[in-house]
Length: 206
Image 1 (cartoon, rainbow, N blue to C red):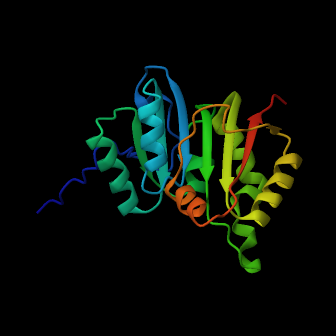
Image 2: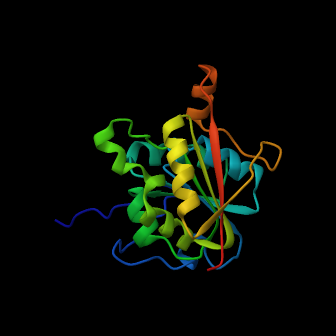
C-alpha cells in the first residue's frame, strides 16, 4: 500500500528539496514585485495586516511551528490574500541556506526570543555576525532590515552589533516614516507599559 502524498496547506511555501537554495521564481512566480520577509512570523497578524495594506507587495512568513504556519495560512486565505506565503522552517536555516540571495526589499525580525539567561546569550540572532551577513545577502542593494524588541539589554547589544557590521548602516526610524503594522507581542507589551524599541538597518554597497 503506497503512502499518501503530503499536501501542504494553502499558501504554504513547500520546497521539494530543503538542501538546495530556492530560485526567485519559486517564491511567487516570475511576476516581479516588492518582497518582504517576516522572520518568526508567529500567528501572522503582522503579515496579514501588511499584505492587506500593500496588496502590490509580496510577503513571506518564516515560522518553525506547524500550528502557527497553519494559522497564518488559514487567516490569510480567509482574507482572500494571494500575496502571502508561509514557510515552515527554522529562521537561521531559511536565511542562511534556503531563501534566494538578493531577493528581498525588506526583512523583519520582530520581538524574537531575547534569551535573557546569560548561558543563552549566544542564541541572540541580532548579536551574531554570521546571521547579520546572511540577512544582508537576502536583501537587494539598499534593502532594509527592521528589528523590534521590548528587551532593553538585547536592544543595546543589537545596536552595538549593527554598528560593527560592515554590511549595514543604521538609519533613523520613526512611526511617521511609513505604515508599519503591530504584532501580537507589540500590542501585549504596550498594554502592560513596556518600552518598544526599533532598529532600522539599510544594506550598504561594499
